[in-house]
Length: 410
Image (cartoon, rainbow, N blue to C red; front, side, top):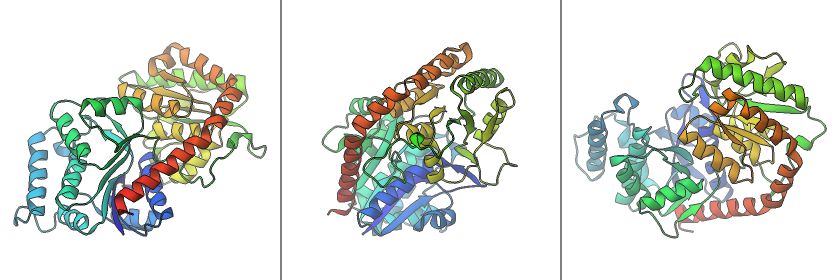
């Protein structure tokens, strides 16, 4: 059985996006556990993806961000790719990566899209990539599965129609928030194949049916895990950094936790190359009065282990929160817009937590109170986690069973 898997993977210029890699990695891992040995990934850096995951990889179809505002160009490319798949020749250059994708879909037993949050009008090129892949799967009679998605919340005009078509062609769809499920129903996509799930990477690297929160280990010095993205929702970055520094100083002073930063979109070249989240962290660190340290960014497994080992987590990124709440770690999510509000609310809610604040809450100090209240509620949070983790894990296992069965016909 050969499965073709699309995820936003492939490290470029040594910049890794932990969350995107994590969802793809867990999808591949779950298929392998269920006997799928032949996997091909679509990647922006196929050689790197081959080395990282030990599977075949080819370039994706390619809908360039450079023409993101030119919908006609995106539609034209989609049409050329599909007409080529239908047998027309001379429409694409001989070295166009779409030829490889067409061949891969034709030869696959099933086609899948791993978890993500880019079926939104913010990133129309990603909608086109997925819609074209779905249309290719339909042309060649291949089962098509979409897992662990946030849909929207910004989804407008033709993007709605295109997303509805691609989801409508899927035999199985996993949606990781109630808001996404509601939007999909608005699009007219319903049926037994639409299922509410958790994020694909929730249990990345976890083999047991349930595990105790890692923060209970006496071997680990207690720490507060912090990840901050550069995006602050249009607010002044310096003001946000100053307010976040005050928040973390209070957390350190009143909880005794060490403040430790872990960048999820960052350079793999080491501490001398601060890009992505590391720049946001630097702005905060330079304003703090309490000591802190930086945990080097390496890979998704290490990121998950780090988040699960924390006593408290504060994050404006999605997957640090996912890794933390899935292990019962008290977590504060900082939402900076409607998109991050939907994602973080869903991430925490799926594991019984609710401490989502806004970037403006950070500025006015309310977020500090929420963070300290969340810390004080640690025992109750872990108790809630313990009461629901086994059925959540069982539901996750059942989801991956269904995904594998749908893709392989077993």
